Amino acid sequence: MSMTAIKMKQKLDELFQQEEAWSVSYNRDKNSYRVEWKDTKQGVNIAIANVIAKHERRGDVALEELQFHIHESLKMMHEEHQLEGKETRIYPVMRATSFPKETKSGIPLVYTEHTAETNIYYALDLGTTYQLIDQQMLEEQGWSKERLKEISIFNIRSLPTSTKKDTVAGNDFYFIATQDGYDASRILNEAFLEEMSANTIGELVVAVPHQDVLLLADIQNEAGYDMVAQITMKFFAEGRVPITSLPFIYENKHLEPVFILAKKKPKE
Image (cartoon, rainbow, N blue to C red; front, side):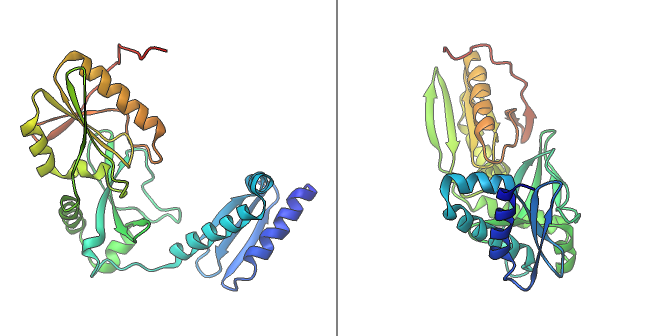
């Protein structure tokens, strides 16, 4: 273990050993540092090499930020969240089918299958963040999965659906990107999709490339399919929480994935 790593471990000890409810440990083989609650053993792993790199670039500010984020993460792990009385703060969140089906501590997350590409998870909104609802929370409240789903869908309908519109090559594109954490979830607002469908000239295509955007397109010519494929792929690549790069055709209240090979590549 190099002197740099030793010194960083000492700095982390100073930051985290003062909390009596936490325990700290160092894994020499992985060069990682762990802070966890003594009672539950839930905790956070810190890659020492990454911290050293950040510290070299930004100094002690990087350590202050690290301390804050670790503290917040551990605090949220230890909070007991009640669903009862917080019905208005439960929302559905869209995730890829490859998204984990259980928490890091092995508790199954509550989810519903949606399409071949997407699943619906459920979140308790905590203000600046949210917690995905797991089976243990559901059982403790005596709730059924059906009740959870109904409440979340009701709540998603209450969120605004104002769109930004762009018209390109005879096709209309609509975007919802409010950054409220539930933009993609608005795909579950069937009343909104039906309204959009009623107002489309051509075929309604819907996409959830990542968590923070819902894309709708009124495809009126062949070029539109290539365009919606390219836009969806671009957003998928850039998204903080990617979901799927495949758009869906919305027809008869059903979402069907569209396999489009973009023929018209943007010019270099």
